[in-house]
Image 1 (tube, rainbow, N blue to C red):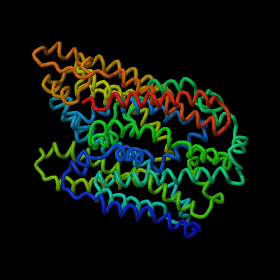
Image 2: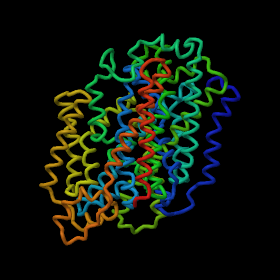
Image 3: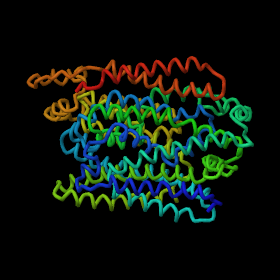
Image 4: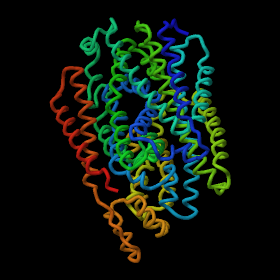
Amino acid sequence: MNSFHILDYLFFFFPFIIILLILVQFRSKSNSTKEYFQAEGSLSWFVAGTAMVATTFAADTPLAVTEIIRTQGISGNWIWWYMSVGGFVTVFFFSKLWKRSGASTDLELIQIRYSGKEAEFLRGFKAFVIGFLLNLIILGWVNLAMLKIIPVFFPGYNPNLILIFLLLFGVMYTAIAGLRGISYIDVFQFFLAWFGCIMFAYFAIQLPSIGGLESLKSKLPDHKILFFPNGENGSLPWDHFLILLTILWWSSWYPGSEPGGGGYIAQRILATKNEDAALKGSLWFVVAHYFVRPWPWILVALVSLVLYPNLSEVESGKGFLMVLQEGMPNGMMGLMLSAFLAAYLSTLATHLNWGASYLVNDLWKPLTKNKQLDSDYIKFSYMLQLITAFFSFILAVYGMDTIKGAWVFLLEASSGIGFVLIIRWYFWRVSAWTEILALILSPLLYILYSIILKISFPYSILYTAMSSAIFLLVSTYILPGTKKEILFSFYEKSKPPYFFWKGFFKQNPNLTQTIHANKIHVSLLGTLSGLCFVFGGLYSVQCILWNQGYVEWGSLFFLLGCFGLYFSIKHLQNDE
């Protein structure tokens, strides 16, 4: 281990002690799968939203941001900032629909929304592919980040053995805690990791070899601190930027930013106590994830670029960690180790619980016809979590090189799926066959455009998204539809705007029409206001840090966003 001070040891053991104390208080005491995977639908908006943020703050995130900044500068962050568009769409258009649906997982929505054997197949297939295979990829890159982090703190020790210990600890407390315990632990872990990164950024900027913000700015090429891309000197090209903002957010499936909501975001939304909590919790998540957290990571990444300009692409993420070796004060090494452990464990626990919820609720339960006791299903989930942890370890050690590379692969390979996940709420003709076709088309179009025709990212996504959207829309008029009884039940439960379901009631005049409130204009205002708030806020911080740019414009958009969000939330509350 590095030469730790007594403060470093205190910070190192601190999170384990707190986790155990929270575990004792909030451990799952029920044998109900609804409690274990959904916290009985009783989480407050703050706990649910913070748990979402903690999960997206994985140990890999600051390393991936460092990889981006070292190649494309600050403007390269638009490769993930664009996801806030889909985030605000989920908040204002879908969060309340999810809560109203009454689903236990987002895959259960499939059999609430669709009918027939095709719906059963789709639910089970997605449970296996997402809950196990894609979950392995996600946890694989999270584990890969820890394999990069461990040698910095424990040089001379076998990182694989340390990672195995962390995985076992994570599996243990995930099994004991259930979603409720995990969520409360996530709240602690988020604030610990966030505070650690803020302190790290502060001390990194004050290093003698950096000399403060002005000195840091003078040591960096101008194109590295651009907020908006200009396409020059490795910066993100403008057409890439536009594709990200207009196409990618609705076309690609990505954990934490699924089009229309989904995955562990939907899991936490469904675990809230009411519709207002679902709205506020998802809003807090998007604001915290895209506005509150990024700048400490960005500043440390820029410091690493100055101190270690010649790192290879594979090693570039380590630049974030190497700054720790540059004369940090006592306790900083331990605090950052705690921050990374907190980030890693929160992501690990959520993905293990979430993946097991799919495999148990959406695959194993239907296969066994719900004939087993809930306690047996929960015990089965323990085994699934252990298996997932084992294979994610193997994948990290033998199957991945860079974190950013895994990000881009997942975005490209899933870019034909997102469209149907959005329109299924509003276009009644969409059936399970449409969604099955999307799952087939997406990898085929990825192979065609990215591998055979060698179209580069993100143009490959543009072609895949537009092609699949056309195919899928046409298919809704050709493929078998959903039974009208199921569609009517879904409409009455979820209460989507009547405007988009007029065609269904015209074809079924015998069904009693319930005209649900059409607040699309308020949802649109909320989405645009949220984007003004986040982008205006990020740009204002950029202007203040570097003492350049149009801070008054950034502040104006930020303030307009504040007022718009307040108005939108006020008018969307209590409308059920």
